[in-house]
Image 1 (cartoon, rainbow, N blue to C red):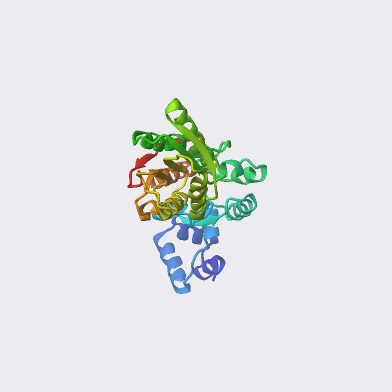
Image 2: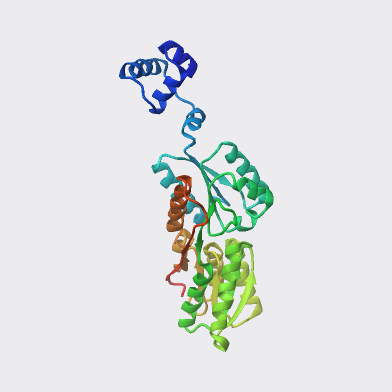
Length: 328
């Protein structure tokens, strides 16, 4: 049965049935009881779309991330989903792979569903969000970007100070007496660029006491192994390797250990994200904690406030912390 059948059987108007279903407006006790009896007998379930049209809210948010298999993204997406679920929202999770075409496709789908808000998880959306087609879609709902900024009025941001995060790693290995440092850049994102810049600036602060070099590889354990091979091949007196991601750092550790390089006595290694890769690494990886849960919860708070009518343009900044393991 649909709402028209319910109204006909109960002998009331469609508007009265709608008021009973949505618990809005004035309906006498007798009329309400009569409508509810028909609803109960028919097993009627109101359409989410129909209820959304009445309440002007679908109670749904969309989360777009790069790849849910990456622990950092997974933890943030999970935290966001749980927080909104407890608030009575449905969450649509989309894996874009970091590409523009997939981002456009998912944004079209979720905006057509009239989601109440959107959270973008990943600094890759800094660049993608500036594409005219993407920006036009993002303007249709409140948006929060984790670890990035969008120059549109309905967007807010939660930023992580990645430059200072990598600087913590440089200061840490410098305090251990390490002087010849490599930084491993393994992604092509705004966050990866900020980390590289943080490394170079931190090295400059030490003047001639520290020499820093940037080496690039792919984001993977194998990418880390490649870095270890490059160190061995070049015969350079490198005594510390700072990585922009834990997964790549684990590859560096494995590659060095298999070649008989002692960690951290010969070469100190640090990662970034303080992910499950850091805790599973042996020796335990020293890593930069970029506070994914706190960032995710702040994204939820900002989006909720915007969906309640507050303007966008809010920027919250978190500072990472160093989590020491046994690789330094």
